[in-house]
Length: 460
Image (cartoon, rainbow, N blue to C red; front, side, top):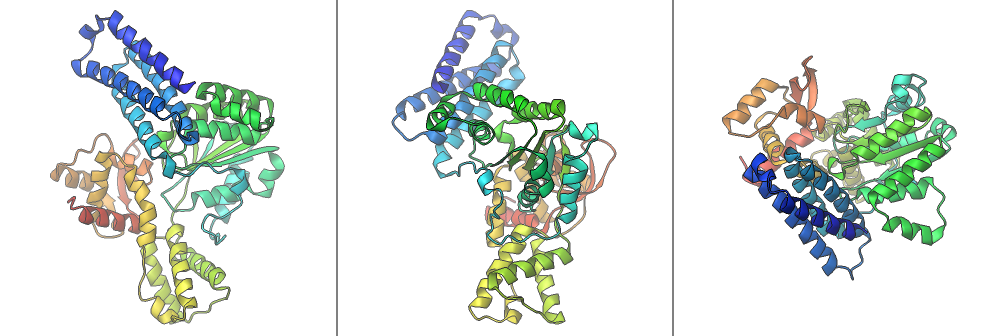
């Protein structure tokens, strides 16, 4: 079906450009080149699908459905002469194609069956009690109309604990008791919109065995979305969690449609987690790094679980351990990783006095690289220049602009605001104006990543 849609779009675009030669008068030559490039991209995808029909294609098939949907949108932009959108469409199609080529290494979506499990294996939670109470009772179960109408976004940098908080909310007794239908989907950078739609239907709608499941796989995105929304209207109350939503997944229309149903039904809610500010219409719960006290508690609890022992430390050793943990920047991802390392070394016979002398954050930095990789080239250059400042330095927006300008960095529009929206920098002091940041800072681990990337790749 997706292949047929792509072929139909190619035919429509070629006919439009052939029959409407007058459009060349009204558009720039580079725009016409982009239109031709877009048609060429669609033809290349059609050839790729035809040549790989014999392969196992469950993941590629899902991404192909996303490609076909975007091809239809691109065709509308061309026929309505929305020339400013064509280059953006072309970049989007190429991103989907890249994800298709890399799809075999990606992880599939995971469902509500795994929503009660800790991904790191430790099951340790520290410092989230107030966040859980706030989200469950003051937001999700609130009777205030302005909150009922808003989907909920848990936002924060990679590794700050967004999934853990969402999991605590999802499994909270008040949520389980209130919502008859619940669905949890964990996404990766390889997840397609098609997979999200199919998985939501599987979790929320009673389907009749393998036959119906196969039919879902063959359906296009628009048909799946209409089917999902139709069932959601008929089956409140429901609670949906989409964990780790990324901008390139192009879920905007789906999220807004689901959110509109939660408004009309008044007892249905959507919660997502993301590093990015997805939509201004969301109620946003910003997650912060742990303070020194909570960092130490998390480290202790994790170490105790892995050593199966309640470890006791002298005041001097505790002070030494706390000093070591400062390098983690209050990031649970790094704290748990360090705790597992130290527990393993302790079980091998090494004394705590020696273990607190050094810290290895290479594993944590590796996990944070996904954040850097997802930045566009302009923001990557901005991020690399963060390494010029001291760790934990409070930075003024004006000073950052001077540094970027002096180094001939193309920053685009409101770079600081864009870095904040993607949880790269933390606002210390905002301006009243929109898209302005008076003072900000970078988490120590991200500062370390900036230093590593800028020196390792000889970028500065």
